[in-house]
Length: 340
Ligand code: MG
Image 1 (cartoon, rainbow, N blue to C red):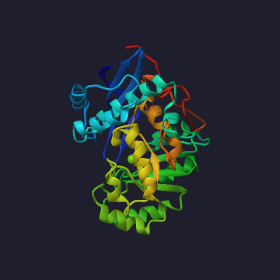
Image 2: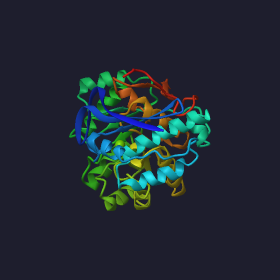
Image 3: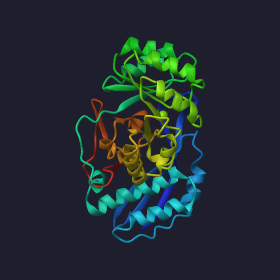
Image 4: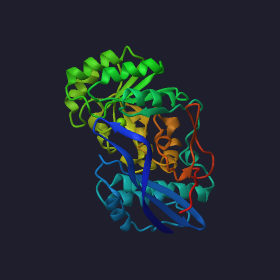
């Protein structure tokens, strides 16, 4: 079993701005595990606000020894060891986890959702994300996203109400709002949420700074809309901490350390009566396809990451009229598009 990896820069189609900054690219590390003529593909996507970067991922991968059985029947034990190899490093762990699950599916000739005994469903609609934009950009982006049944609008700018009023000039579709910790004051946040609740908004993601759980609990008690934790939940163990202060959690493979832990996080969230969004970073169709197999377990889906990039390395999960089509091919169900 051979592990190889290389740094890759994911280019974004548009400048992507959120409350904490803007960027036109996302560093990544692509992973391949080769075994018996099959290749399992994995990916670590590394937006700059996370603690990991290409060097830290490569440093982690240098320490990984793939001592697994030939049929990967001991994948769970191996992933337990991988978790213990270092604290954090969750995107690095995710890259190995995703590649091994792809390989495992290929060796068993089963798509990932079948390996996890997840039933496919119809009408799995993803939101499409629109970063903080000027009025002109906003119009162009919304008009290019008409196939989606709902949009995720990034707020936490200085003119949030203006942004929403502009959005409403172009579409009446339901909106998800992601503030990325951009509202500091709980009273301001509650006023904004009350105002948004009359604008066909379905939920509010991470309105307050991630460490301020006290105010998050205060806000959730009074909010007419569900409040979803994103930055406030990085690990499975964080769910216990936020269960009284948020209505749900945005589960992302890069935060949980891969598919297995994302699956576990979703199960635990439901046990704790938390709603679940399955989300992503800007990622290629490798990690996005991996997450798509878990989409039937989620209450909301935000898997548009590969739609936002201009140099996708893979063909995999597709979106048709806003609906995600989970691949049926073995493993993640992806093909490498560009030969290196
Ligand atoms: Mg978010």
